[in-house]
Length: 613
Image (cartoon, rainbow, N blue to C red; front, side, top):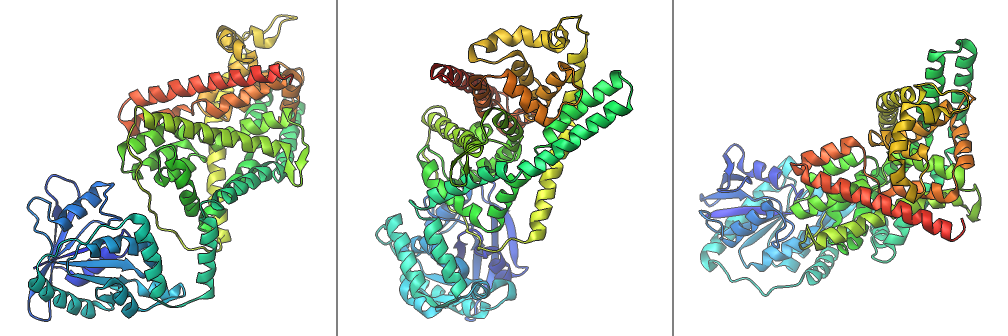
């Protein structure tokens, strides 16, 4: 006789399999696939021996991955060389009963002798939930045995139930499957069965259930998510200002100290115009980046981030993607590199490719300094409503434009080169919990250190090279240093391509080193204006003043629109090449991103001019 152990991922199947079989296991691969096959033997009270197979975790028999396909074929008796199991042992997570009961109905519908192992009941009780196995057994029509696999609790009762099911299998053989039931019907039934099986529930758990009923509501959930994002971007400007001003003042004082201490010459100019003006103009945005990541870490640690993925699943299904793509795209708000690498969790190759191609459209933290300095320079610091600042509203709009652009590109891709059906999305929801201050501080320090390390390496090197190109050769009397320099000659050569979209020479020059890291655009502008200015002490405040004086509002808006859509840094392109095993798709990514950036920057400029801005 053969028995199969199956259930959702993370139900504790492997722990139960090890507890039942001990060392009597054999591990190999299923023929023709890389999916692992684990089998062992159980000695029953009747003296019979049963071969137990541990099947890969599955959410449904409507398969979306190789693992689920193997499970379906083995259970249905369709896998070559594998006899159909006589008994099914269905493992359910007692703490996530309602979700696991959806797949349980599919399994029970097959009509095979089935035993339910209600696993991890200790964790359910810890979470304030006490279940009634007898009521669940009555509702499901199969034996239900409470177990704690890691502590070997309930194993003897489970083996006795398997023994009884084995004899029942000999008597009835393989029954025909029951009539098919739709997924919405199963979900409703799962909810009703779970409610019937609850003996008691703590106040805290009931509160969590009520929170989920609001935060995961198809109509209420999305506005709550977008309202939270709106608050975040308001806070990025409002809360960071005092700290950013303090850092900017410190950079100005350092520049004045160097000017007063060192004699006029190459070294002093390198330190004041190159390093302090360039790298310093980026470091002052550290408070804004810390505030942004503080909110992201809070959303993760409280358990809300996973729920945001479910909220976005409905919206992403409209463009052919699923909530599986949300986590990599969300990671791309920090940096597109880990976001692209996180797509490895997406089983569908077309879903994965689409997600890789749109990940650079998510507004990474490297763009924040660019947005912040330009917005602060050209957008008035005024209020447009109670607690709503115009600068924060513009920043929020830029983030939304990136998201809308990504969804539009995904829709086009899924309708053409990556055409295919959208895959389903199921994910375990973590418990709500209060964040630990120590974990938050460690997370903020790690992200701040990454930003500072980039400032001390990539931005440092790019700023020094750019300063040298801006400094030599020296301008003659009456000639602008920018026009006379090597950098000015380079920007003048490519300037005609950017004249139609309203870019000036300094903006065009900033785009070249920005390919190394987005923040370098700010360092480039600061260094350019410092070299071309008689004042050595160019701080971030002075940079804002230069932008406000030299850029028109249509020009500044066009620059912001460019960075919404422009390609990410060279490192992102390299990671995309590695993850797609070639240059074809990274080249496609570069081409469409440059095209979008140019079109939208130009459209923004000419619309702004047309309406009189």
